[in-house]
Amino acid sequence: MTTDYEFPYPSPELAAQHPFVPLEFERLDEAEMVARAERFRAHMSTRRSVRMFASEPVPRHLIELAIDAASTAPSGAHKQPWTFVAISDPSVKRAIRMAAEEEERVNYLENRMNDEWQQALAPLGTDHHKEFLERAPWIVVLFEQRYEQLANGDRRKNYYVKESCGIAAGLFIAALHHMGLATLTHTPSPMAFLTTLLARPDNERPFVMFPIGYPMPSTLVPDLARKPLDEVMVVLE
Ligand code: IYR
Image (cartoon, rainbow, N blue to C red; front, side, top):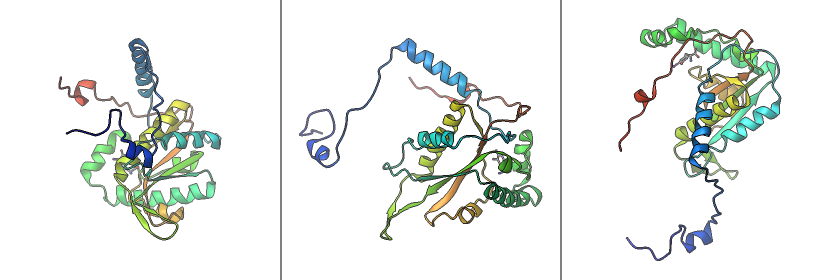
């Protein structure tokens, strides 16, 4: 196929309609790349899901920085189909805990999670008690925007909403860990109660929630190992 314009992309027509700007990119030498990559990997490998939080407050600004970092995630057609609701109000946290524990009670004690599922969770030691939802100084609930609701009442499609929110959630977790906070991805199932409780609009559905804080000094976590590289990577070269 031939084009009537010269590399680099975009064509003059596209550029006239949708401006492009030069990429900000710093080319590093390979030794520096390896050093950074190893530091990052080592730091990420110290991240653990935490369920035992200190009640010590966390400044709101830190939560804002983590949400701002998460919101740099790539998204389908750059629709950024996410809303992060950050809660420190004790009465709202309590209401979330009560509703989540009721859902989880049905999951664990009335077998909405079947035996195979409950056996898979046994090493984690989880049950229907969710005290961390009140103890953690912040809960952030990430809502996916199933479609975009315009002010005039019209709707616009969003694309790859789950993928986009999953990536944003990953960046959020990394941002929190990087700044020295602990969190847990918590998905009490079903989570519909969060839409009502947090008065979110109809186009939003809860995707995942994150209790956030400092770990309790004596925090214990399950003694888990991560899969080695050769189990998670396939190379074709
Ligand atoms: N949502 C429940 C159960 C649970 C499910 C999975 I998959 C986990 O990795 C951990 C917990 C709960 O939060 O207890």
